[in-house]
Length: 404
Ligand SMILES: [Zn+2]
View (cartoon, protein in one colour):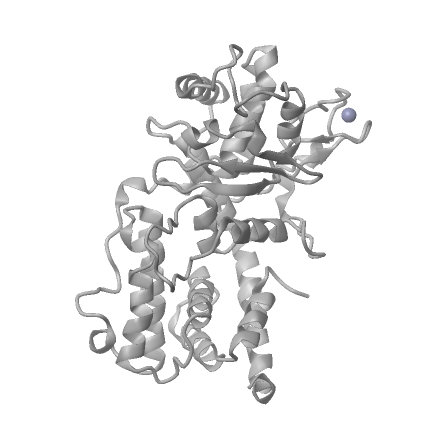
């Protein structure tokens, strides 16, 4: 059985060029080198190298020209023009992978790298919010529920839908507020929205929102068909930032959630989704960048490791949610839509009672033991993944003739 797509990824790799020896060598090297070879670092570097191998072949006994060519692809990628901390740290990790690659061949960074490029480059520390101070799934449910309670009747559904959409798109507030109703498509499992470009984020088309879908559907059904924007005020104006900011602050206050928003109560949703999607591996890191609008194709460079489109990111999301494959997962319970036992209506994760019939939704639909922000279950998952990757590589090693 496939575990978290690692099998497919390696399968793709094998079909593309069969340059697996390099990957196997890195795996062996990391097993010896890392204190704990089951660390997520291990998986990350394996993943990075497999990405690189999709674009560059013949990395065995690499020469300086080839190495610098690979480096240039990373340095010149859209990441290079960004000041964003996440992107810089991604590049740092790619450089570290390249350094490991050299080490497996007993080569030194100084002899091979592009002049003046250090393995590690300083990132902007300003944005390093502690993961534990972001909204985890339980916090999100609590927040949404309270936001609904604190809003006037007619606005509670809108506000719940807004905040859930803000989280699920990981867009900036300004971007979400510019979503037009005509750019929203409702289907059975997801609601697709197109977020217009905003600030330095590019337009992202048809993001399939799964978690926010039930509340969004219900909200959309309540709107006049000719409404222009998805989120409007009672007076029919595009909803304003200030109102939402105030609502968010009030909600944090009332729930007493221990989150850190540093004057940007709405930006926290974006960060929280990124962290959640990353920990849960809803999609590979590069695609998560696309989803959240980080990798701007501003410069036309052919070889970008993360030069993919929203469609790819959307497909990853669907896949990881089991919407496009048979591989269903059960980890998404905390935020998974809940089905009402009485009437069958789908409700968003945060609802204590059914939208449709008012029936109490079963408390076990909201398990309180799923912690995404700390520790063991995730680590166990990672360890399992690395183990299965390793097994697969061993197996492939045996069948190397077949691969070639
Ligand atoms: Zn019901």
